[in-house]
Image 1: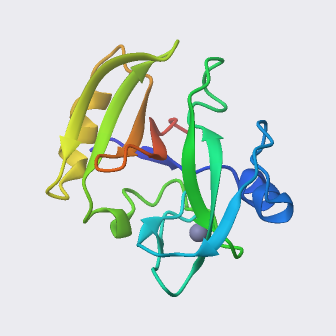
Image 2 (image 1 turned 30 degrees about the vertical axis):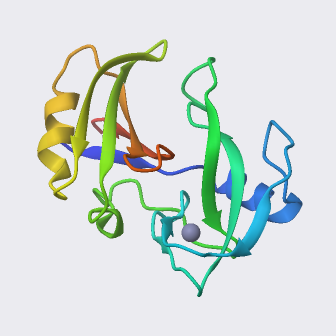
Amino acid sequence: MPPIRVVAIPTEVAETVRATLRAPIYGFPAHAELATDDAPCRHCLRTIVANQDRRILFTYDRFAGVESLPQPGPIYVHADSCPRYTEDAGFPEELRGSPRTLEAYSRGRRLVAQEYVADGKFEPAIEKLLALSNVDYLQVNSTTAGCFTFRITRAELK
Ligand SMILES: [Zn+2]
């Protein structure tokens, strides 16, 4: 598979939410609590473990930084500081076991194609979608909950 970038939310966003308990841009109150079920942190892309980790739920524009047309929705981060997922580390292993929808977009937020992956074999689907010449990036969402998880782009050649 050609190299990809796995793009978690910016550290600045996670830190701002932790410090203010408000959603960036929107200002809506964020909700901090002990996790009641397992869910991925959108900053470190690891599992927020139920009955063990604290989490913050807040409103986030899943197209922030790539499109002018927003699409806000709820996401979680760890309530405590965590390291941002390394962009060149490949598909996050902790997320492989849950069904994800890969949405392939061209600029202008135009949905070109999508793939539902439930068997953990994400790389063939990613490769197939990024091979489409009119696809600029992929949005990865939870298939069961619908929430935004992270973005994938082609890695720039250096
Ligand atoms: Zn985290």
